[in-house]
Length: 257
Image (cartoon, rainbow, N blue to C red; front, side, top):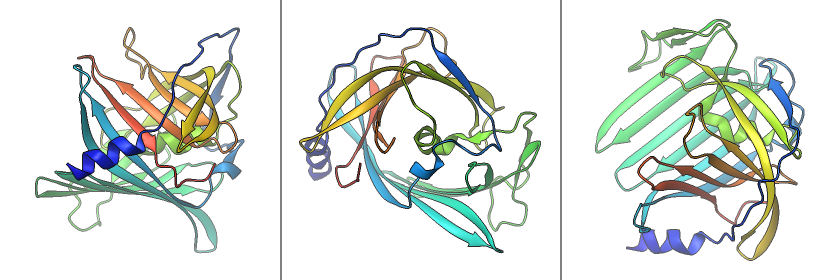
């Protein structure tokens, strides 16, 4: 299968991490405050390959994800727009998210999905104390949606970009309130820098921070993110599943570090 061969050739990573952690420095990332390393969120497009490692060790492709960061001016105000296009054998997805500059405070989020020929559009607006469906958006499946957000929340659909702008350092911990538009109530999640590791991507060594989270599923295996120290771009992500399988996301080597 050409897609699978292409996927396998692109997964060039050498793993082996240390989990030595001393006293941690926990930071609560507060919505609305300027993010300390926001300058690392650079305009341009990066592409990830995502695949599923089954419990028996076999490999199955899932999709290719292209993520573009744009800086736009609307009514004289600079905004951040992050557009994601996911393309797989049976599913495509486009996410279009608008944010406040320097803080990543969510403003709007649109999700257009096509699964097995079934097309669905969802549009949301983030307000001060709630997230609502965009009522005047054509064909919005979620136009009547509303959920309270007593604590201002980040958009969970751009978690990798949020990691990029944090002050990563040894033993650092970050508590972030995230909300997945259209989902259940927002919640705080803890992301910990648990070590450092060198990866090799297309023969190029990359020094990375290794970050872990349990996504509030106590006792479950940790999801892990390898973040390049210089650019703080996520190079690799590993999401374990309960059946012993895992979803792995790897950055294609065209990206700049």
